[in-house]
Length: 98
Image (cartoon, rainbow, N blue to C red; front, side, top):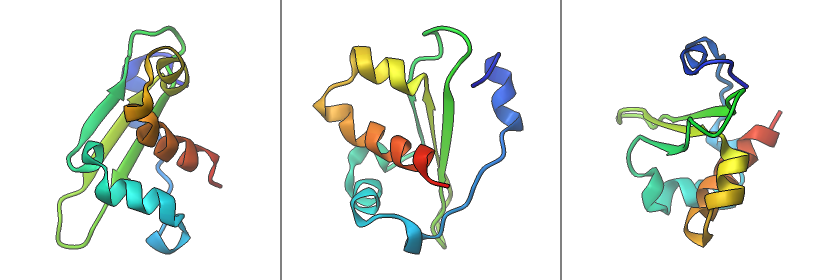
């Protein structure tokens, strides 16, 4: 959780090699159009503190793709659709990963 959006720059990222990521999540990351280019999901203005998650996808020989999700839970609960379900699944997967 962030007190203010600028706090996101202080987060520590965890790294996961492809070998420990489920096939279902890898398929979404590789095939879903929402993960083709860096993108921001959710809404920064859904309350405080701000729920914030960041996913960086690195592939050899390619530029990193950065995905940010603001207020994932409340945004998906109120505004989510079947179309957004894969996005929620990916971020929820990594949130629960140790």
